Amino acid sequence: MDVVLLGSGAADGWPNPFCGCASCRDAAERGTVRGQTSALVDGTLLLDCGSGVPAQAVRLGHSLAAVRHVLVTHAHVDHLGPQALLFRSWTSAGPLDVVGPTSALDQCRDWIGPDDPVRLVPVSAGDDVVLGEHRVRVLPAAHRVMADGDAVLYDVTAPDGARLLWACDTGPWPDHWYAAVAGARYDLVLLEQTHGRRTGLGDGHLHLGTFGDVLARLRDVGAVDGRTLVRAIHLGHHNPSEPELTAALAPLGAAPGRDGERLAVPARAGRPAR
Ligand SMILES: [Zn+2]
Ligand SMILES: [Zn+2]
Image (cartoon, rainbow, N blue to C red; front, side, top):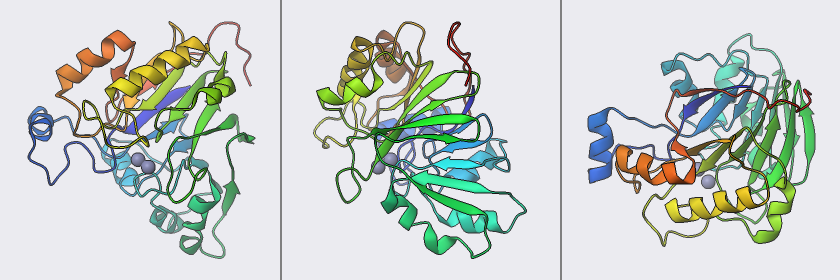
């Protein structure tokens, strides 16, 4: 499985363009710029497509021409910029599935022309779908746009058997949700960590403390083990400077994701290919 992070920042990016806080100034001085979080998997499957993501892809040197499936977690603008469907329609791009909760797909309809080869595939937590060569299990998210259940997470298995968890956006899971990922032994976990050292901003996102808690629970149930690559994504400006963030994540077995980072994720020996 070949994964490229097209963005690793929160909705507003990091640095936030309008902010002069120490964290934003430090990131700007280092030239560590993070756009809206998204990942391109095996060139064909796009995980979230916020309004800024297509331009981020181009600037990072990645084409979206081969994308056939877009998995949208929820309808927040940093995860779904449906205008991209119009821009795509001006090309000779082929068929496309847009997969996501019904409320997210509703945002797409006005951007699809009558002859566009775009299929909307509604999903909800618990669904298990095959998209081209990838298998996708849909998981619940502790996050909402307008109503409970209108945000989801994705568990993706590549043709070579490698398996990733896309957990963005979510707050801490209730205990009984972990049964859905018990024994998953993910090869790659991409888990949001929006708020850094800032607490008290609600339970729809994770901060460094709750990020550690969720990771510990994932280890308890065998979803994460010593061979799982873990990246913190959806990073916002309440995070400390890059070296401090890296140092805070290291003991948790995680590292901050970076825009443009390419993760070649080998499947584990003994895991069947799809
Ligand atoms: Zn978000
Ligand atoms: Zn959100």
